[in-house]
Length: 358
Picture 1 (cartoon, rainbow, N blue to C red):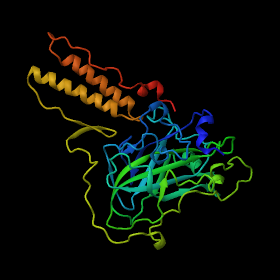
Picture 2: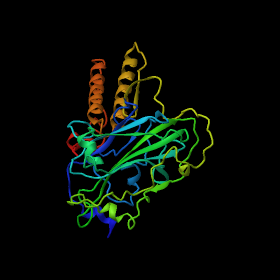
Picture 3: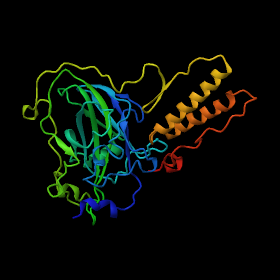
Picture 4: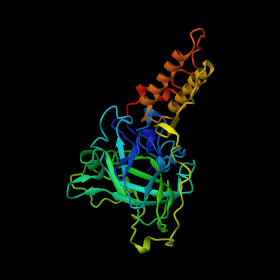
């Protein structure tokens, strides 16, 4: 079977989803904050179909780090939110017919906000779940029907401190038994700085892409979820789940000193944040030129905010940009003609509201 050609023949479907934000011990880190996701609003909810694609690591644009890295503690509960509509303009997490397993992986990095560090070796699994014989539901079904699109896992309590990518993964198998097979992966990555005093390093690490063997894992990727008698247990792919108390899973177990987070922090003078963008309070002014400079800076900041807004924040960023334009036009002295700002329309057609549908 030509697994690398799934996308050429895959059917068009509608109820896709996207990982948009996450919670640390119940505290929402807010939409897109510390999250790597596609910057193409119209296609952000599309699945990854090529098991050999680098996009399988952190999704489309997943090799591009974002400015913020959110702090967490070893042993914290991390909850990932999935949505059918990135900006929550309509409710929903995933069509319940999209049956399949879930997993969460982590990868330690020198700097989670840096780019070109997602695909490749270093990933270890901290959670997986497939079919529950008690509820007779797949993990994705429970995510939709029982958990309102929220997937929670407990972070390892004994791994080394520092920067990590944390990667939730959903696999929809509703079309996996078709010809050609069409298993659909949904993923993204959270940038996290883990506070820990332990020094363990999981020895069972894999490469993404690469953790799926096309021949060895064929049964998992072509699984018949619509069969009357399911072939259970589901043949889960990837490494075994890392267990903090399992000595056979431990690499270096030397105690480690706790480093301090330096990069990825929210600016102390940030007065407004949208996603990974921070707005800084404008300098006070008392003159006409000061007013002009302030309005010009406001427009530039709003443009930067809009350009950096992911699919979750397009409407908010557009409102901010429009407000900045209004301020700029009304703050100028009457005797001065205000030239229309360059590129006053959205700088990329990918962020129009018409393209926000999944």
